[in-house]
Amino acid sequence: MKQKYDIIYSIGRDCACAMYMKQANLRACSGPFDWLTNANFETRIDLILNDFQDFINKNDIIPLEKDPNMHNDDSCDYYQNIRNSFYYYHDFPTGVAMSKSFPAVYAKYMRRIKRFYDNIDKHNRVLLIWFSHYHNTPDDVLLDASKRICKKFGKNIDLLIIEHTDNVITPIKKQIADNIVKYNVHTMEFDDAGYPTTQGHIERVLPIFEQYKLKRSGRKLFLRIVSDIVVLFLPFSKKRGKIKQYIRDEI
Image (cartoon, rainbow, N blue to C red; front, top):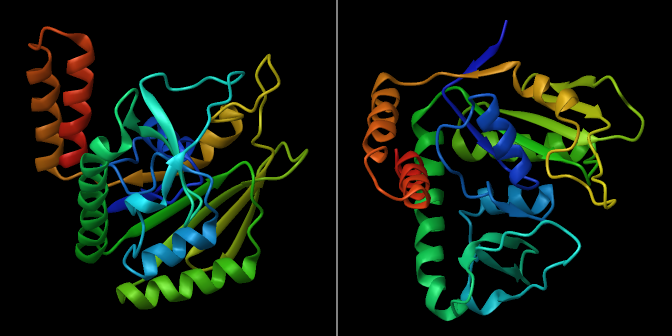
């Protein structure tokens, strides 16, 4: 039987987690960590605990060079945050000075942060998911993070941890605590050029996400259906996609 939650959020390590959540119908809205990469588990937990203090300051953002051998998002310039090590791959439009695009990016993240706290405050069954090809977070770190998060929100918050382990083909499940489940499995997969793919071995990872279910409210489901119908009447396909995503983010 699938475990059901009122709200589920990705806490990283990159956009692969949000992509899996979308495929498994677990993603109700955009969260503050969905499209960011590189920063470790501990950094993200600290941000949740300190109300995202200094999460995104203009003076901390510097250009990040693209790797020409990898698949890049041509619609955006890349930047990194020298304070917390986040990489921004999907936020700053190509050819627009960071000083001009920053206010909109900042406002977007402030909306997502506010909604993140509002949703956790008002829901009882909350799940946070961490999926990484690159980390092996010790159990004591997970236990400490869980204890502090539950204390902050005054309720039980569940954690699902999925991390890469070499040569483990069948996922190994470990119940670290009543509210912490960890899976170790060989997630990393490489493309023809020898670079790791974003999602890795889908056939091994997606079934883990599919063990969970998001309870969807009738209102949100109705708004999603209406938004899908409305955008069909827009003349340009690129604009349809952007507006559709914006509506889904905001509801």
